[in-house]
Length: 276
Length: 321
Image 1: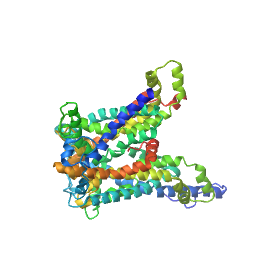
Image 2: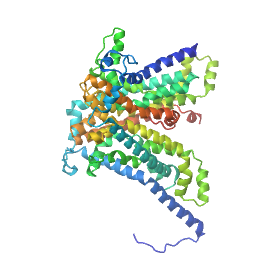
Image 3: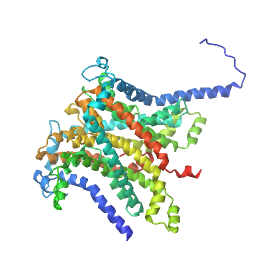
Image 4: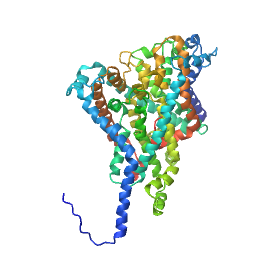
């Protein structure tokens, strides 16, 4: 009896939690007249034309924005996994002078709010000539190739602490240098941490907005989130359906990652407190 | 310093020691080689920009001039912020209200659902995954757009209310209700702390509950005297993370207000105000001063959280010592 009540409560809460998502799916398929009148989840008249209308709503097709987003997210994944793994190997595994101090500084940067640095970084990147121009993505990418996402360094250090030290020591006795220990022991055994980092890097970058808003000013360079904000400015009723269609499409990659890696994502936040 | 080319050495078996010293040097070198990208990032992307930002906060810098042309204005930016800029205080009030209300409600929802879920045996993985989904999607522009439409005058929420005969409001455009709408979007994403709570609940030894039942403790007393203390480290962890996270909410405030923080500054989160001052009004000296105050305040709040933590956070292993 009690477990039935509990299950019922869970289902009711879940219905509230999922309603906005289902409503988004339904609305993306409704006609303009229906969006205002029908709050139900299922459209009375199916209007898949919203997707075509949204896709070609602006001077540049929406596919371009998705490609830009995918490129930024993909390169960020590469940068984060490589640079954070290198830093984590040094901080978690090697013995060198001042290691303790650098580790403490890394922990300190975990809690540093990124917004504080946006203005001086903008000035710095502008001085270097990276802002604007033909390929304005350097300011979004370079920090990730320099292991500035301390969360991932921390995640990997934690992970490497679980790899038995005997493995390194045995390799060292056999004459292995720190580089070959990295290459033949740490790198293969760190695969799970690398996968977690890659997935979270992708989702965070795909959803990121603040920095992309600051650095991307030319329509052809826009990423999907920046392009979506263009819909907000046009408030005509006919654009609501297309706006929902493109919003829905932009969430599909994250949703697919969720379906494919659900277990890993949940474990990822458990081990390190990574936010979704 | 004078260099002594032949320093006197005590006669020791040379080979192993020289080997160890060489190995140390090699490890030092390897350590710094592996650390070099991070060090470069620390210096170039974090430390130096922080110092530039501190300097700029005492100037009238705007991106229309070069850094060297900026005029030194002393504490003017800080004085203006605290005494002559009403929107600044609006931003502070909005951000603090947001953190004080949305963060506890989000954590309470997370804990409540985690408790329900912890007892349910069947389908826990499915439920856990579905509750977690909003945390993955909720920070995006797309979801903020959906939220904005849902709480419009013609939005789904009002249509729902009208079914019960309740007159709706343009929630997003109402100065009283815009911020609660924003908070609801944050609370909706309770899945991430919930997953952490669930993991914490799994760690509580069941013998404690069995012993308490034998002693006649009811459900509430078990929760109050076993679950809460045993879970306090996890609650603390979530509190620190969500508070810092809550202070930095930007995307949803930007989208819900169309980039203005309106209506009447009611959703002007601190970071949104900082963006408007720095990148719309191009008053980057002033925005740098805002950034530094933000940094100091967030730092202070973290310190306060950690120092009050020892009064209520219970670590079972340290208690046994």
